[in-house]
Each structure stands twice: as structure tokens, then as C-alpha cells.
Length: 85
Image (cartoon, rainbow, N blue to C red):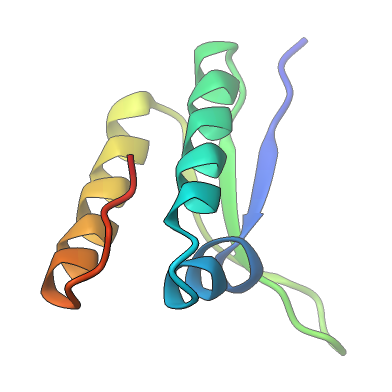
């Protein structure tokens, strides 16, 4: 049986990166990678207070997840911030 992980784009990714808490995002990516290795999938959502969440994307492979991390790191570099490990 595989387990999926759902990541809130705002609470789990955007907010920590904005606050310079890159280590939190790096840990989320580490856990997401483990989920993929074990046959699960990574679901990225935007969560709202008074509405159902929107699913922004789903990753089913390590290469897809790595591509997203690379795109986030491109932004981190442009902003002069620490990269996600």
C-alpha cells in the first residue's frame, strides 16, 4: 500500500521560503521523495479558508519533483536566497 503526501503551496512552501526557512522546505522535499520512492504521489494544493482546496499539480516521479525544486531554486537564486537542498 502506498501513501500520498499533500503539500500546501502557501503554508508549506511559499511562507517558509519568504521567511528564510529554507530548511523546512528541504525537509518537505526529502519526505516527498521518500513517498515517491515508496510508490506514492505528491499532491500540491492551494488551500482556502472557506472553500475546497485547488489541486495545482501532482508528481508521480522523482524527476518531476526534482524539476519543480529546480524551478523554485531558480527563483531563490534570483532573490538572493538560500537554495532548497
